Image (tube, rainbow, N blue to C red; front, side, top):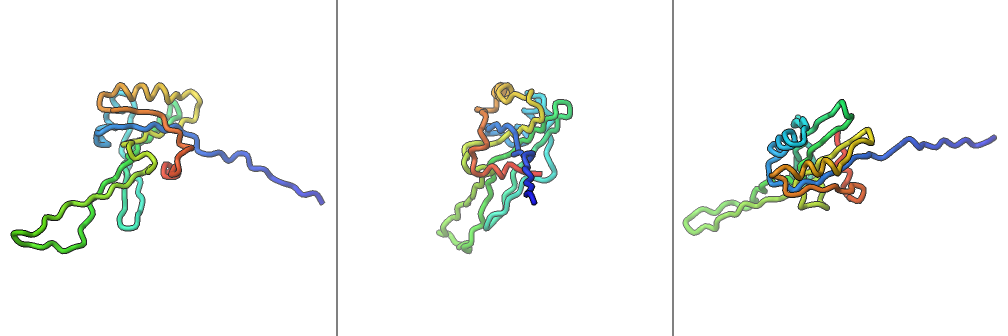
Length: 164
């Protein structure tokens, strides 16, 4: 009896473009700037991207826009989450008591790129999309310091960019 083998070629990896954005604006202000200058319609999702760590949880803002005419999905993701850590020592009161300093911890969506403030993930179903032209449009926004295309296949934590 002959042995039959099935080959599964149809399983493909996610294919998207990833643009890193350096900007000191809050996420909602950056989304407004992208809507205004790049002609997107980003809106805040009800659920942020959440990760659980040992002592606390981090939530990263997520804005999305589905372009039904061009078959593209744009996702604006925050890369940094900063939270205050509660002190475990009891506060000593008195005139000469040591002042407690606020301790903060910062978590990153993509730890390899700690300098990046935001990521713009573009999932395009057609080959007509050009990330170079979008990057040049992003650089015209006055509040954006710099923007560039990132090769997501080289990232160790690229699975953090898979959501839905």
